[in-house]
Amino acid sequence: MPETKTRDRDPAVGRYVNEALRDRYFAACDAVYALGPAPQGELAVATRFGTTHVYRYGPAGPDAAARTPVVLVHGAGGNSSQWYPNIAALSAERPVYAVDTVGDPGRSVQHEPIHQPERAAQWLDETLDGLGLDRVHLVGASYGGWLALNQALHRPGRLASVTLLDPGGLEKVGVRFFGWVFLSLLATFAPKALRPRLAAWLEQPVLVVPELRTMVRLGVRAYRIRRPAPLPLTEPELRSIRTPLYVLLGKRSLLVHPERQRERVPRLVPGARVEIIADTGHGPQIDHATQVNSRMLSFMNDIN
Image (cartoon, rainbow, N blue to C red; front, side, top):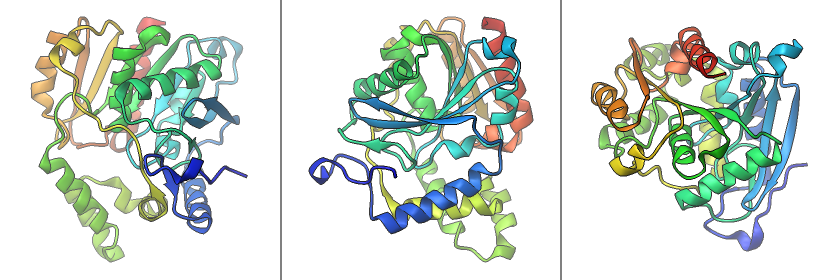
């Protein structure tokens, strides 16, 4: 049975509102996980900040199993089930570990506050250590992209590479993005007949995948999120990064200005690659999963 209580109900520690909502949310999560391949196993990794829940996927062949693994870090307010369009392709070639972020809804359990960027990097480093992983390809989407970029800044020792999918951490999050998030949440309550049109207008696949829609709506009700704000890295901080970096941006992203970052990031981070995916906004790994999976694997294969 997952842990449900935090020490003295610390308001700085994420938690479920009650067990009934938690259980309903977990059932909704399981419906999303079922859209992708089943994990080979689930792991609970003890860290200073709480117990990190990790899903392990892997290739059948011994040669592929020996390759440098991929670690996936999901976006804000979600969990590892959001990687269902990507798991099969990635795990066909490499071991894959999908991490539920401490402080976000999912099956990880937070015990200590984790608001500072340095603490977030310590948490992820302790998680990788607990998994016995000395070298990984780290992939982060949206808020998870900020966590991955933050890791390259503060704790790069285990990183073979970092891939960022329309990430936080490159610019200050603007009003246009928060407006999109608010409208997307409102649109989950729209009549079924209107959702495809709203999904196209908002470029929000959650609206047309019933399992995702149910999970997102329950997550907002069930969990009180407590984790670091994705503050943008300064130019000196970006210049200090030496981990191989690959950034994939949606052409119509509302989180970043894609053309600006395509010029800026390679100028600041030595050797960084930045590409823009057409016909998508903030979720290229969902909207164009086949293309994004192929590009990610090609980048990782160039390294090892």
